[in-house]
Amino acid sequence: FFFNHRKATRYLQVSLLLSYCYCRPTVLSLSQLQLTATATYLLENMKFTASALSILVSGAAAFTTSGPNAFQVQSRQMSTSTLEAAAIETPLAPLTVWGEGVKDAIALQKESKKTKKGEFPMLVTPKMVKLEGATVEEELAYFKENAESIRNNMTTNGAVHFKGFELMKSQEGFQSFYEAVGMKPCLDPLHSVSARPTINGEKGSPVYEAVNKESRKNFFIGMHNEFVGTRAPRAAAFVCFKAAETGGEFLLADGRRIFEEMNPAVIDKVAKKGIRYSVMELPFFAFLDDLPEFIEKPVASFIQGAAEFAINSKVDFQVKLLWGQSDYDNTRMLQARAPSQPGVIMHPETGEPHWFCNVHSHSSVLRKKREETYGAERFEDGASQINKSDMFFGDDADLTQEELDEMDAVTTRNIKYVKMSEGDVVLLDNYKTMHGRNVFDGTRKHGVAWFEGWEGMRTPPV
Image 1 (tube, rainbow, N blue to C red):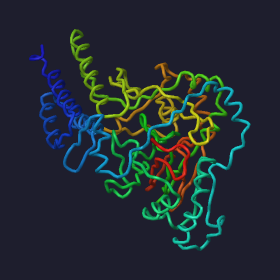
Image 2 (cartoon, helix red, strand yellow; image 1 turned 180 degrees about the horizontal axis):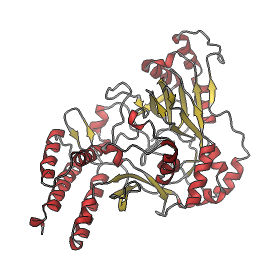
Image 3 (tube, one colour; image 1 turned 90 degrees about the vertical axis):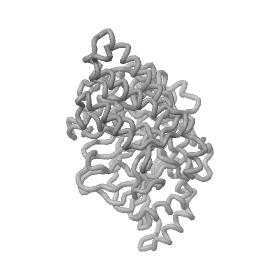
Image 4 (cartoon, rainbow, N blue to C red; image 1 turned 180 degrees about the vertical axis):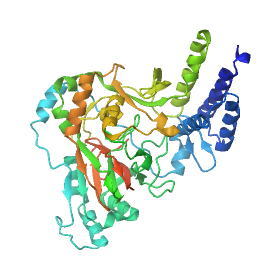
């Protein structure tokens, strides 16, 4: 059969080639050119388009850490190896602090409504702290002298917006700011699975781009806490080096208020069942529909098992692959789902209950709803086609439309639109505070630094 069905044979060869690259227990030094050339040769006989090839190779890149001349392909153990630690001084993003779980979410919700919340976000300007006309050295001295109160305001209020300061208009000044405040940088939480661009283009820079691509300008980034799998920075600082001509506001939402305002039945269900994310889609398998029925299922099972093994060899959390159809173009795809996790947690520093659920950004239903306002999402390159997400309850059950509407409405009415200017910084607690980004026109240059913690914190990062 396979001698007469070259298409299936070639696809299996490509799958085996890429699986070999992903799953080797040691670091490989395989040239991107070699991989591309080999895949091209195998695909030539299948008459695939150049775009299909680029998606396949992009799929390979999505699960490797690329250097200037080679793929650095690592296993789960190698992703946190001493080799990597020696090469990169900045620590990985810390493990997420889930806590002991919420036993009675409805009672906690009632109690939380009684507590007084501070200004969100808290605003600090040079005029408010008697620094009008000050030099950057005087501003830096202020941040050093008031570091403890700034950190306390971040954890108490959830976010602090520094507006109108000169110091943070450059990357060097921005780094001096957060060092003066006592924040401890960590790597981007995507570090083990992808590479977010840095703001200055230099590898190893601690300041990353905050989704400035022109191709993503009409993509409304929904509200979310930053975490990937088992890792979540404890805090973050977002900086504006250049504001977009139109739109591009930085978005904030207080997770405590979302928790308080959510329908009690929804809160109770999320707390009891947990949530589960689909973290990527692999849309390369339409060819399976053309195979004879007796061979389609074995081939599909082989691909599912090989791909699941490959992905789990790379990331530090367990991924389960399920067959499905894309909500965008009905393409047959494999959907990768992360483990179940809590959607409501207790804050590790303050003990307050808050919403910790990225449904607003991850739900495919809510994203498609936003397309009616902002236009279709532009999934143009390989990485964008892979990085499609969705959300389910912890038992893999779908959320009802009524539940999604409630989550969307409560989150949306709690969004604060922060129009940042050059040098503005928002320092936020990544557990209490959700963030996002409005659509924009023009050129936008915002950056972000992630933090494993800060000086004097009660619960040190792991």
